[in-house]
Image 1 (cartoon, rainbow, N blue to C red):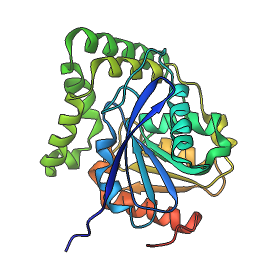
Image 2 (image 1 turned 90 degrees about the vertical axis):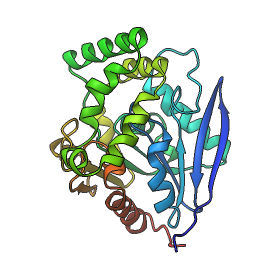
Image 3 (image 1 turned 90 degrees about the horizontal axis):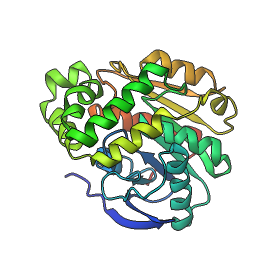
Image 4 (image 1 turned 60 degrees about the vertical axis):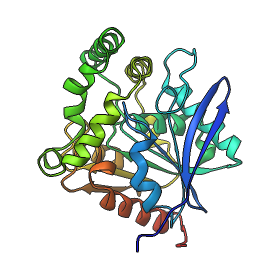
Amino acid sequence: MRHRVLISVIRVTVGAVQLYTRSSGTGLPVVLLHAFPLSSAMWLAQREGLAKVCRVITPDLRGFGGSRLGEDDPSLDLMADDVARLLDDEGIERAVVGGLSMGGYVTLAFCRRHPDRLLGAILADTKAVPDPAPARDNRERIAQAVLSEGSDVLVSEVLPGLIGPTTKERRAMVFGRVKGLVQSAPPGAVAWAQRAMAGRPDSTGTLAALKVPLLVVVGEEDDLTPPAEAKAMAEAVPGARLEVIPKAGHLSAVEQPEAFNAAVSEFLQTELGAARQ
């Protein structure tokens, strides 16, 4: 019989912005931040699979899912500060904070701005280096296209890079689920997040200064942030763990959730002593 996991859903007012958050489990708090242009819905298998070893907290980053965008200028630092205020509201002093893709960029910003709030960090299918000029220009192009024409450009240009070839060939339901999440992304949030990511700084120094355990995860078939990028991040932090997820692309947590959850669970229990429930 499948174990039933209780998922709680709350809305938290962070400054002038209301954030929508799903959480499950008890014990060690682990915040997981979603990829662009998805929402916390992508973490369904993590809320279910990791609830036995930790408290999984998955907010919708501002503008996505059920969270409001607000009127602030685009900034990953602002998203990181949202997470810190969310922890305040939950009465959590320190947590493991992790993210995939854009969520990884926000995690790096959190590491830089709120190092005293960290118990550990998880960086999945992301990178520490900033965008080169052509990538920044492309983000602006997509931002303008989404605002003027809707989500078609996301489906034609962004979606194909999110999923690895094995998933495209063998996991039609996973591909369809991701496509639905991409199509439902609000245009204003998409443009805001693209501009925020384009403006992010080099976080190599942030990694070098990290004083907590680090897990780096990457899909074997990730072409957007390939395993070489993940290896470079892991090598920048003494003692960091690197896990390569077989037959997964950029959305490793969605494409191969069992393997992703096993890597996270092992990290939590080995590096942070999270007891089994």
